Image (cartoon, rainbow, N blue to C red; front, top):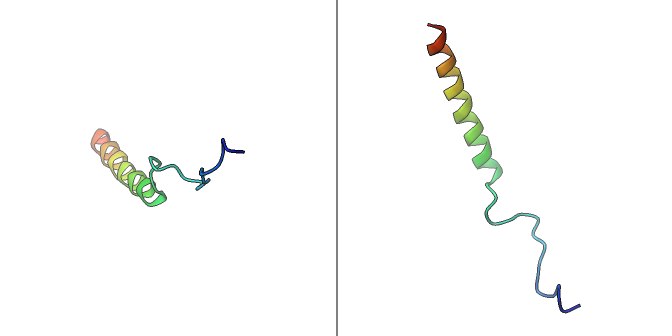
Length: 42
């Protein structure tokens, strides 16, 4: 089929964040949440 020729299935889109980036963001948000939680408890 000419319709699907030349298209390779990579399994990952170019605009998807990498796993490392997601883990970094989770870590940053966890630290921020803990910090704000402690500030509100004071």
